[in-house]
Image (cartoon, rainbow, N blue to C red; front, side):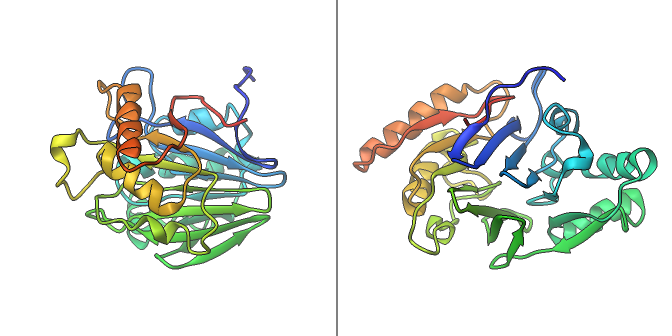
Length: 261
């Protein structure tokens, strides 16, 4: 296996690896949304956008996955699920992998693949739900998106992170901080240029900054920037928006193969 960057450190034993971060579709050599959340004992693949199945295997064998979380049914976030089912069922002889997702995502994958059970142990979740996976506590929040979409907060004794998934401006970032403890890292989408601030589907940089402050984020990873747009420029816009409201938070652009650490 090729050497990998060190994972992004969220806590002593909580790490994030970016499998793909392109918004809506993958640019040349890129991949759509996908992240690997790892602790000392567990590995959760979060969003299975096109291109991320190959990339997750750079980090671990598929047999070592603890669970999969898919935030919604749009293909740039769930596209690899039917292919993962084929790999597990027909090649690797693996069954009962927990897949936490929305009802419509399950319906879509079952339509494409036939019944994906028992390869997938489906767990349909909604906003307000909570699950414990090993030493990771997952809490789900409904976002502002045309289809049911779930942001995810992950807590570990050593740290915390949250992923907004796709959302419009109606997301209340305070829902990502229900205990008032803040977040070590917020993975926040910022897909839209400022002139599209009234969109109902995605966030501008200023809106991403507002969600981050509401969530008590201590650092930001800006993601889901569409191919052709400059993610570093989008980060600079987030920084400017934070400064405009008197806040200073480290802001980083998500990049393929980037990891916390």
